[in-house]
Image (cartoon, rainbow, N blue to C red; front, top):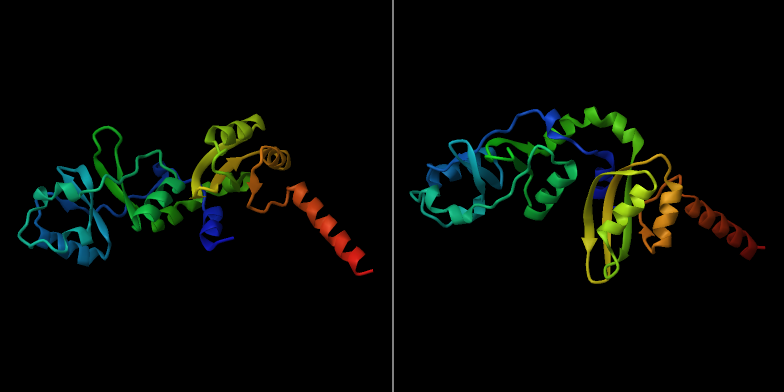
Length: 232
């Protein structure tokens, strides 16, 4: 199991109504490239949000302005702004996907209607508020499953989970190619073994290990029996 997956297991879904507002720095659209470069150097980040009267315009990457003259106005470079942001109902998995896909360490948080810039969400913010999710962590499980890409269906996954009275807290695709698709699920449940067996009946492979998985225990017992038989 990779370190990142272990990290995902440790962390739970974090809602922003618990998020402490710390990193609100941004680039005003009226600045020029030289001033922006100074702020990038001061903050030591790869990307900064650009705002106009507190309204989010997009995320500007430091390397995107490296070759421009310092006198160039940011307002003339709006084509370089990337529409990358989170809204108040985001989960840790949403934050993680954006950071991984764009090689950044923080994501702008904006309001849903007028897209007012609120803050930057970093890993430190996530960890700071992890304490609020302790109870839910005890009742939830991170499940990693895989299936042939041609027959994989998100709706099928959700139907199987809900049919067993479980609830999906968060999910994202861990990896996908022509052969197979692997997804990570954060679920609340009252019993895991029957759910795992149903996934297997629908030709899903269970990648994560679970103590409640009686199928794994059966395989283990059979393996130990065979090993003893062969050594007789």
